[in-house]
Length: 372
Image (cartoon, rainbow, N blue to C red):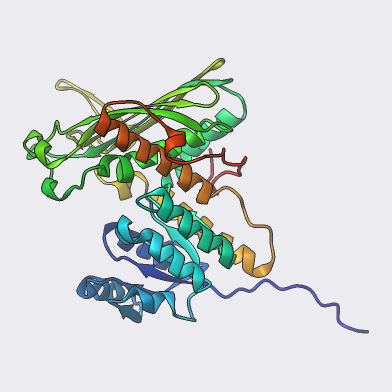
């Protein structure tokens, strides 16, 4: 009798490198080490070496460097998590792709469409995978809302809404003078733009009108600060969406969405820590979330877990899941952000076609999260 050879899946963990050891990079590193069993954090790089070294020591990572190129060129690394500042994203994506590394990149993918398209061309040429950090797709409530939309629960979407209000304090914005013009669109509302695109499947944004001002720190208005914004987006299917943001919500971190359609409405999100509500002589009260890594703890973990699973799937020959935000999604969200920034500067609506030619994202699977 002769053996029948069965294909055996490679059980070795996906080896990840981290570029950028700041707030979100540190959280991603902790997720890999403590919450994603089929991955190993192989190396950490950050030009601020003491920060990178402290994170590596805390997590037991032996390879640490001040030079991102060390991670990019490391033959022991399968994929790279890019959580460096946005101005470095496009070049790092290209470098990782050219080195044969799969890429997980925080949003935005780049500062402009030319940078992003060049980076995505490098990814395509190298045949590696890329996923972007639009974490709301992985939150259980947002994933459930998406499924309801696709199941036809609301009929044809007509009005959509998404908002982000960052947690603040009575003392105002910390380091407000360091916030670059356009940040509210490119790094905050870009999450809302992706969410709206995602919740309006088959359509693309065609026109954008934005209003923004410095209402939290008006003394910095001459510096170009925009800490409050409202954006109206018209889609190719006629739906109209509104996105809004503010950098200083005293009551906590507030992220919400809404889809109103021909057959009903879906609402999702909110700042409450839980559904527990107190009713006392002083009134009605509920605890609220104060950190992004608290509100989206599970979502941040789930997006990285799906990225690792995608890399793993490509390695052992299985069909890769299609649910993660890819290059087309990064392009569509960035185009809206750039159009909004231009509209806020000029006071006029902006046709998205003046920024980029877009196509609708393909129908996609859902995040690997339990919807119950």
